[in-house]
Length: 349
Image (tube, rainbow, N blue to C red; front, side, top):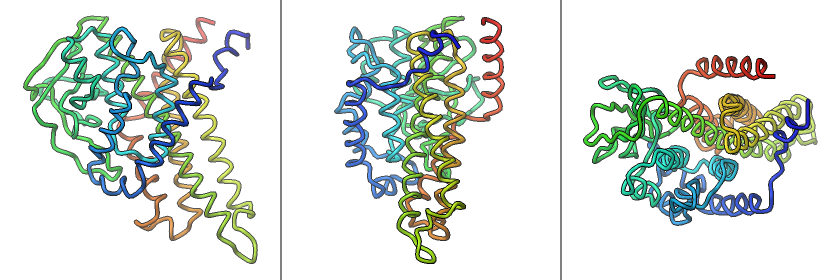
């Protein structure tokens, strides 16, 4: 491996990034308690929490300063998303931030970009190419009035007066069936190859930010399992001292660390060399998805029968690990794209 590749593997945070992480960690720890998470069920949205986060300027952070933003990098946004996931915050962070950045890249009308930047309405992105008359499940569409989608080769912003009806799901995510033909207002933002490139970048950004949230979710779920293993005893010793308990927890911790490193690497590459390794964001999502499911499953099992009760907080994490992972659709599609990307990278080398 050459020094060039080693440069892209450096994931140490700078002082500003550590400050961002600490600030949002404190915010979510205070504002997104498990009581708040439970109260937001079944839709998975807390308007008050979302307003508080918007007041911190999070919707505009990812925009360039010339568009009223803070020039935040994708790594910065991933750090925020990880803390959101750690506390299971019931807010449409990934969808709204991704949609806002896409509006900025597509030179959307000022009123449309302004509404997203200020959080006047909730925006999201349809993760699959849309066909009028064919509904698809869209993340956050149960709380969003504005959906950005690729219809044919046109990037459009579809608006309705009220969000679509929530589709019940065990992960308590604000899913809804959405159809471009139901839009009351349809604005074409771009068309042709340029529109496709911008849209595909937005989908990768959504998966990157969701991967970061899954890392945070997994990390906190693992912490719950570890704390239980330290405090529960059997035969006079903590159950965490037993290999059958300790080893699965360690394996889960290794998965989480690897997923976090991959998220940061993918974010750096997407920010600085977006065309070089586009498959990294898909890899990050897949690895984070697996890590989250493994960590939450392990933590549930460590807690025994208690872990399977509705009252156990780890159950909230388990259901959302499954739910957030499923929102992106069939993972086989991403795996095929990852394979194609790896072949392309090997060919370039």
